Length: 73
Image (cartoon, rainbow, N blue to C red; front, side, top):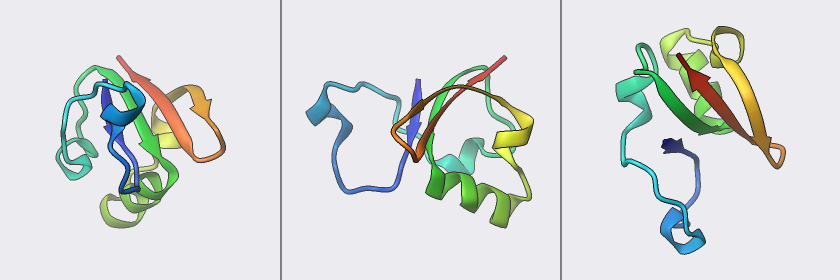
């Protein structure tokens, strides 16, 4: 699982274990897996890289209103 979100909180505090990865490194060509991405990073991906993850990859779940869970095959 790879986690990308905009906050100063640490995921470990909530019991979340995720690989530390910069979104810029995977935005264009993600490896297969589960990606949890905040809306802020989705907007940046579209603005900076021209990639609309919401159209390109399947959303399998949402956490609250601003965090999306993708499964990349």
